[in-house]
Length: 342
Ligand SMILES: NC(=O)c1ccc[n+]([C@@H]2O[C@H](COP(=O)([O-])OP(=O)(O)OC[C@H]3O[C@@H](n4cnc5c(N)ncnc54)[C@H](O)[C@@H]3O)[C@@H](O)[C@H]2O)c1
Image 1 (spheres, rainbow, N blue to C red):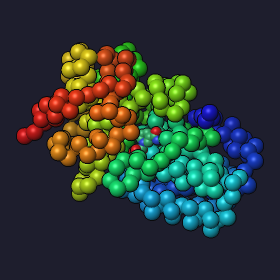
Image 2 (image 1 turned 120 degrees about the vertical axis):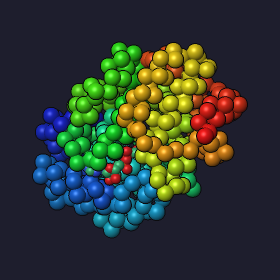
Image 3 (image 1 turned 90 degrees about the vertical axis):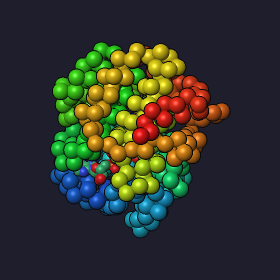
Image 4 (image 1 turned 180 degrees about the horizontal axis):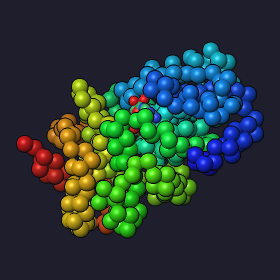
């Protein structure tokens, strides 16, 4: 499984890299991380100084096949072979897309992730889910291939735009809701959240790891990590068609809100959880514009990878107890979404 190095382990990370038998190392960054993070990494880690670099356009709208092709073209130009290592420096878009590009290039080369957003440090960098959006559907093309290592450096978060930083908290809140009522009682106060706290980041990431090691291929318990994502991905996909797309974390907050409502109806989840969640959501993301109409969301929900028959979701029976493969009736979904119609 993936080796995890934190900021304080930088020397071990460098030693580990030097000890690997790679023929060459190629860095992949987007336009922002090339400016903010690559220069720091080159200063910190000597082996990165002379590496080739691939720079791709930033953002979710560029998580697409044409950009993966660009990565493959550059890999060929740099004469990458089966012993090359791709180092993804960026948020979840770079790690998902770089991981996918690496997973099929010459039938698969190794890659590592150096996540530079909160969302990627607590979630996207680990677990081996790689992929791209295609024909408007989120993450619909992709495969499982684990990074050989990840290196978490919370200092990178200081150059993040505030909205992007906040969006990263969504996956942390998800980890808390599905794992621990004690942590939920703490985080719901919001004032207590320090986005740069290395202990919070480490705790959240290690929780994800503890689930992934039990079910790498997402056939069982790992599906609890999809809480909030059935609706969240549909809302995000739908918003990507508009002029003001939501960030991934923003869409996941909205997805969790609806899935908490479903949890209340199906499992009688304590109403106080939903009330506290909505207060937190309003504080963190007060000005979200979103479209909850069934007509627009249905086509995306139907493509959810968890569906077998009908709509299958991961819902909470209580905080810390997430049930997977819960079949949700279309009529119930419509009645909850209708509450948002103005
Ligand atoms: N594979 C998984 O398990 C998994 C899990 C959760 C989310 N995801 C995916 O992650 C993606 C969202 O990731 P994200 O929120 O990190 O988005 P992102 O990668 O688009 O990064 C957000 C923005 O921040 C910029 N940026 C990144 N690091 C920076 C830094 N240190 N300083 C300044 N700017 C910086 C980027 O250029 C981009 O504009 C989605 O595509 C989602 O599907 C994957």
